Length: 122
Image (spheres, rainbow, N blue to C red):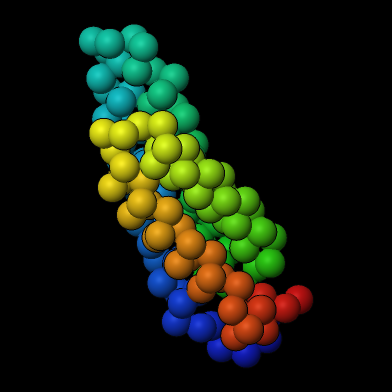
């Protein structure tokens, strides 16, 4: 890690941390709901694991870990593909896809600016 952390990287990391926390809360609630609806068990476990992984990666971003940036980038690219799919194939959720896609693009740009590249340099 070289230099100070750019504000854009901090923003992306904090938003990723919040997303992870929301996933953990959703996972716990789904695990509780699985008492009445057993189908929710696996979805709850996936949400819980996804939340934990997201929080670990967000901490890696804050610490300037290049591997965390690469993994988050892969996740964001998959999210972008998902947003494009929503825009073209789920007409009832077009605006959701557009907003999600724009947010992901902004996050990708913030993670790969020149200042971010300096910060993540090993």
